[in-house]
Amino acid sequence: MDCFSIQNQLTQKAKYSFEQPRALIGTVAGAATFESITILPNYYSLARTINQEKTQGLVNPQTVGDIAIPIQLQNTQRGEHFLAFDSCPSDPHRFLMFTTEENLDLEVNSFWLAEGIFKCCPSLFYQ
Image (cartoon, rainbow, N blue to C red; front, side, top):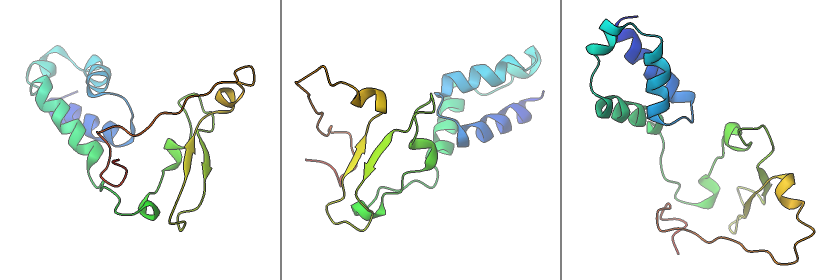
């Protein structure tokens, strides 16, 4: 596999993978010849290319109705349904709840905690 093929394969995998750049690079480079690996760009350049490919076309939503949750993000990596509730995209006070059935099966606990919004969130959700 030549250098161009490796880079092309990395960008294609980056579009549909949730793996970190290091894991993608390791997977693709593991199948390459030593000669082609030696002429690849350095790790940081490859990682930047992968991250750019992953974020290409993404925009921050301006309203809660603009939020579209892709099917692959509605399930966990184990295939469990993760988007438990979505009030409605047209609801001005839209409410999204993410959890699994296993997480809801906590009847033995009478005390629950909920997490707030972090500083590193889209401006729409910053509190």
